[in-house]
Amino acid sequence: MIRIFRSAAAMSALVLATSVAVAAGGHGGSPVGEPGKATQATRTVEVDMTDNMRFTPAEISVQQGETVRFVVKNSGAVKHELVLGTPEALKEHYAMMVKMPGMEHADDNMVSVAPGKTGEVVWRFTKVGKVDFACLQPGHYDAGMKGLVKVAQKPGAPKTDGHGSHKH
Image 1 (cartoon, rainbow, N blue to C red):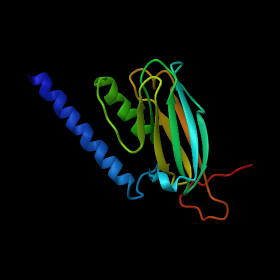
Image 2: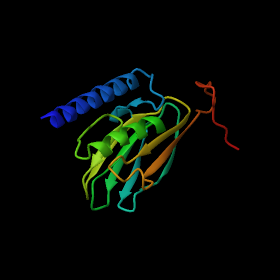
Image 3: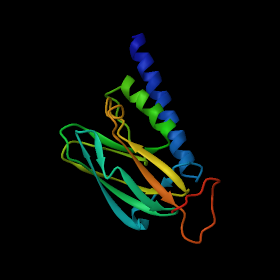
Image 4: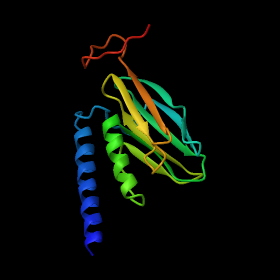
């Protein structure tokens, strides 16, 4: 009985933490952007996930302020997912997934896709810099199932952070 209570408590803590993180993202406070509206997507990027633990493409370039519709296809035989986040948030979430492998979750910054199926994430990239993405199914992140979105400053737009991005 105690074991069940611990899992329920851990699950509640994760749900609460995830809800807080997503809510913060909706107010522009997230370092990775905010949920987008499909009607405002300026383009669609198709991403393929395979059992060799890779995303194709693994690197995507967007412009600050752009809303992108990611159409995510699972070409593998096992479940995969695409989760956008900071490296720290992804590692923390992955550690929780390893402890509770059967856990189901759904947030605006992610999509879980069954084998042979397709899902989508619509995301607005509000800040210049890099946004990581990964598959957080147990074993997949450790096997290198990761990718990167490079968010470039709009031509002529003022910088919104101290880092900026330079193209040479």
